[in-house]
Image 1 (tube, rainbow, N blue to C red):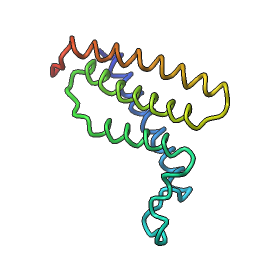
Image 2: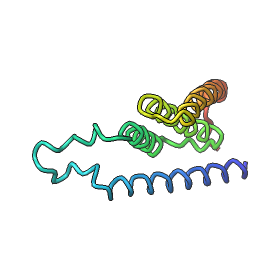
Image 3: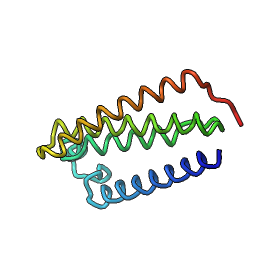
Image 4: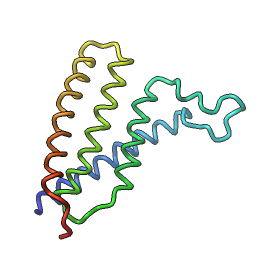
Length: 134
């Protein structure tokens, strides 16, 4: 149980760090700034390179931060990892759509394959193990 708590804490910390760095870099670049943008420029960031990946990161962050924790660390871990893996799949699909490097394209295909299998395992586990408060 202590190992699961440690993993969740480390995962949450790593996620928070990656999210903070990504969102901070994005904000500092001025690319997200619809606030105060001259007329006609608001919303243009949707055409920017990397937007699909940022959008999947933001959606994952929103979903994970709004998840209702059950107190069952195993179930909470499975729930959060499912969202994390789905974001990885979404980012990999954006890479396949927009990327050029053959090595990154191959990695994106592998991420989609691996994470899809992991999501299936997590879904099966959660279907058999309903959350219980501990």
